[in-house]
Image (cartoon, rainbow, N blue to C red):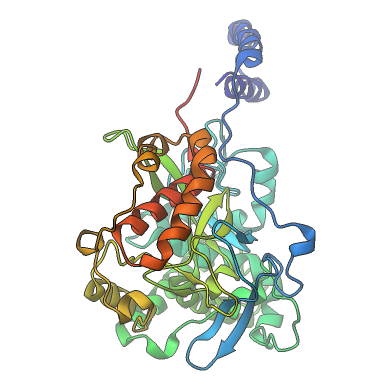
Length: 438
């Protein structure tokens, strides 16, 4: 708090704060400097995991050499294990090619999404706040244009993450010519990159599976965004009609890609009613590698957000040759097979045939309970619910051993409980909005 106060005072003085009031402000700055010496740092997340250089994948920029990308007509591109993977092993550490803040806008940076209570406002709009002058400057490539229309967009009844396709369409303007001349051709590429637009453009749109109403909604959104950009910004100034047509083409394409591929950026925050830390979405990101993972209602990988970077970890033992599965939000322990299949069909256009659906595994309440003593580990649930990082570090090795022992009994309540405990151990190391300390 002292550091934030000091920064606010510095900005006030730079902004021609009245001379008559400056002595009082300078006294507060002295007090802040003294308090700063006593202040305990509260990091937004723990140190980010990394992949050792000798274990980096030579073909996938962000991944370990334990996985590979393969393709077949039935599954499309998907991820398989190239060797045995242990529980908790880091599979990938991926930064988004593009990201956008979608919620909690008054305490997160508009550009880097970092939690910050001492933000710098944009001088021209009420929608963007930045954690530093550097972020403010770096955002100009897109915010110089979206600045004039964000307030209007915020009044529209649309999913907040739709702003990300618009932002990307603005950022990649200088590459429009390449996009229209074969951006979807990756046949000559040896390295699958995470920070490049080409990989994002090449993700599936499910165009052939979309209904007329689904496509109409995205076409209408494209028309609205195009109108706002053309009428209220100078984005197309000096450009020919070809630029405008390409903008619309790219935007419509990304509005389809985003629905099936873009990922939430989350943080853990204390619920004021239950006093328990819960996951909350603050942004959206375009992750080219993470988007290649197929869904399972009983996944074998999990993801944790460290800032906007997503770390992918093995939540089960994975054998060489096995496919790696993420979860798209519908887990067999929480939803019935009918609910899962219906929701996945509507949003992702596939009939789920994962092991949980094929064998009709029940929800948690209907699963068998085996004779396995987990009472000591389960006592730590409350501490983990209160985001106790030390507890997570202490018990994680034991929880991994328990999960490994219980895997042969899948599905059962015990394994669900152990996996949830492991998920908690992982998540408290990621983005965590702690209680402020004075």
